[in-house]
Image 1 (cartoon, rainbow, N blue to C red):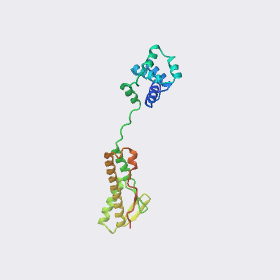
Image 2: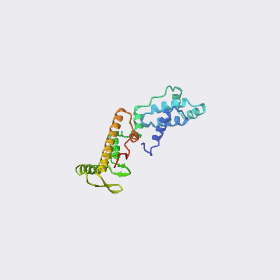
Image 3: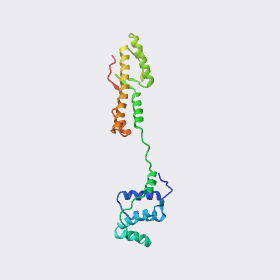
Length: 222
């Protein structure tokens, strides 16, 4: 951003913005002549040529108000004004530096963080809140392996609401639901990455708007 203690920087920005909109007003001519006289950014010829072109297109009253304040040399520029002068590259670079482009967003990294949030955000299984953070995934996998070897046991399982007892069938349903949720989360990230490559997803908002897996599950827990 330009410095707020420099009055000519906002003047330059306003003048060039108005010019880009094909405006030609008395204030623009006044500003351009002032910038030229002060040799702002070492492009006085551009400012004076721009001022002359703007002034030449004003109505009679505004044009005369400007002419009354000019030297003979400056007034001669108005009489000979031709096409709009081209903005010097050096000036464009200076103006561009006031509002630099934001750093590019790594959409792949953003998609990965979104997938992680979805993956570890938990699911609801038949009204039971099941945690799916990485530690819970590991414990659920261990419980699944345990009931496979010990099918007659009851498993004490901790949910976000507290402890419950689950049969082998119920524990396996929990494990399968969590596994399906995790796989769906990674599959969604893969699809998002493919759409980033294809150019159909180009912003973080579009990553967020993708149909990520919800926290619900219809897996039975008999």
